[in-house]
Structures are given as structure tokens and as C-alpha cells.
Amino acid sequence: MMKEYIDEAEKALLHTYNRYQIVLDKGEGVYLYDTDGKKYLDFVSGIGVFALGYHNEEYNNALKEQIDKVIHTSNYYYNVPAVEAAKKLKAFSGMDRVFFTNSGAEAVEGAIKTARKYAYLKDGKTDHEIIAMEHSFHGRTMGALSVTGKKAYREAFEPMIGNIRFATLNDFESVKSQVNEKTCAIIFETVQGEGGIYPATKEFMEQVYALCKEKDILLILDEIQCGMGRTGYPYAWQKFSVKPDIMTTAKAVGGGVPVGAFLMTEHVAQHSLTAGDHGTTYGGNPLACAAINKTLDLFEQNHIIEHVTLEGKYLEKKLDELVCQYDCIAMRRGAGLMQGLVFQKPVGDIILKALEKGLILINAGTDVIRFLPPLIITDEDVDRMISILKEAIEEA
Ligand SMILES: *Cc1c(COP(=O)(O)O)cnc(C)c1O
Image (cartoon, rainbow, N blue to C red):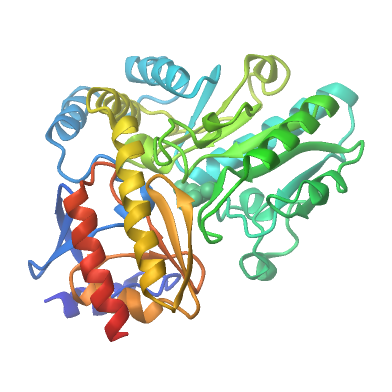
């Protein structure tokens, strides 16, 4: 039966993914089931989206209630879920103003437009530059792709939006040397996800922050993957004595519903986008905002951040043991429940073996296995994951 679905999918869907050969059907907690009924322990959570696990009854009921009220109204009118979601997201992030989007890439687009408008209002010029990082990932739309530091993703789609320079994460000099009077923003992920799980260092964060403050350059932190509690802080930058001028969030913020946001300080809000500058038909619609509301409520009720801090330590310890046990593993990188195991060889075969054995894992680049489990995992789930992973490593 799965084979038939897969064959049909390959005839109908545009082939932009080499998909794993399973058809996922339903979920329960940290487990997913395929259409043949096979059970999988999920350490990917839909790429860091399903933070609260599958089939959370309270979350599902909140969505069902909203569906019965109204799903969509457009941004020409106010709606209660959006007001509530904006207030809660402000409190959770420490930022001042919110613009809801439908995806992460769109949040990055909005962040870029905000930075350009801020600079434009200062000097009236239209040649501002943005500094982004090598190995970064910010999404597949043209603006987000333009600041994505992987040439293979960009090449066929050139020309990108102009005036982007690339520097190296955690190499402050490489950033500083690119700054000039045209620089309007510096954008990076607090923990690079797609690019191989590279956390920004405290020193780098604080140096870039100070440079931005000194030169009135806007610091844009992309927290789409590393945010929403994943590193043991609401947003990963909160670990440091810095604050972004603009921040993006998506993936886990809606607990599974497609939604994102870019947020900014009051100062940037007062000196950038105004009525008519930006918009979206769906962004922040009542259904998406009901999802954000319930997600943020459940984060608080279930002490998710505190749980991640503890569980992240346990996952780190267990992964570190693997690094000691296996010569083919070079190191572990990451923070909280966003971890990467760096292998001395491509990891594709290990991931396939794990999948056969009922464990869902994902790579980040060719030689890193990435761990982005639902934030509700327990020690037992980690132990089970480790034991399957060991078998997969030994057989692959
Ligand atoms: C996933 C991701 C994006 C893009 O989000 P989409 O919702 O896929 O558009 C942008 N930045 C980072 C850091 C991401 O991990």
C-alpha cells in the first residue's frame, strides 16, 4: 500500500526532495506511524516543528474550537487570537512588535525589508548592504536565499538580491572587515541548523552586538530553528547579554500549523515599515494565531523550557558517550535539544538503517546527524534512540 502512495506521489508532486520511502499517517506523543502501521520514534519533529509532540489533546481542541468560530478574516480587520498571540509572543521573546507570516522564509523577507527601510529613512540611499554568514540557511525565497551561505542553493537562481556580503560565524574579524558606511544589517542564526549545527559563541555574539550598537547597524537573529525553547531559553540569544533589533521565528511557534513571525524593538518599529509597506493575506490568521496561543500556553503550563534544560543535558551526555565509543564520530555540537553528531563519513546509510529500525533522524549536511526531537522527550526516549542508533552505526 505504501508503495502505491509513493508511486503516485512521484507522478504528481514536483520532485524537489529525495524523500525517505515511507508514508507517514498519524502521530502520538513522540511516535509517528506509517500507513502500514509501523511505529517510529521521532527525533526530528517535522524539522523542529512539533515541539509538544503529536496528538496533544489540548492543542488539537484549541484548533478545533477556532475552526468552528472562524478560520480566516484578512489583515484589514482585528481578530482576537492575533491580539492574544502578539501579546504572548512579545512576553515570551522580550521583543516589542510582531508581524505574523506564513513561514520562516517569509519572516526573513520581512526582516530584510525592515532593515532596508530603516537605513533608507536614515540617509535616503538605496544601496545598503547586508552581511550574512557562510553555512547559513534562511529559506528558499529570493531574499532569504540571497542571505543563505550555501552556493549550491543559490547558483541556478542568480542574480540574487544585491549587496549581500558573506562572513564567517564566530570569526568577528571576518564580519568587521566587511562593514562599511552602506552596511544596514548583520544577519545570522544564533545556532546554525541546516549548515551543520554550529552554535554562535558568547564572544562572537557580544562583539557583533557591540559593533552593531556602535555603528547603528541592525542585528537580525534568525531563531526559526534554534528558538522556541529548543536550546533551553525561549530564544537562543537570551543566553547572552545581547538583544537583536529584529528577530525571526517560525517552525515550532505554531506547534505544527504553518506560521512564523518577525519581531523588532520599538525603536526599529518606529523607524521602518509603515502602512502600505508590507502585507500578507493569510499571515496571523485566526487559526494560526489560535495555534500560537495554545503552544505558548502549553510551554508555560508544562514548564517546557525547564524540561529542555534538563533533558538537553541528558541527551548531550549520551551523545558524548557515543563520541567516545565510536572512532567514526568526530564530535558533538549543539545546545539543549538541538544537537549534531559529526561523523568522519557521510551519514546517509546510518539514517536509512535507523529508519528501518523505527527511528527517524535527519542529517545537516552530508556528515552530521541532527537531533531535533519533540521538546517533551524523556530519558527513556533518549535511551531508546541511542540503542537504535548504535545498532544502525554498527550495521551501516
Ligand atoms: C527552516 C528555516 C528557515 C526557513 O523556514 P521555512 O518555514 O521553511 O520557510 C529559515 N531559517 C532557518 C534558520 C530555518 O531553520
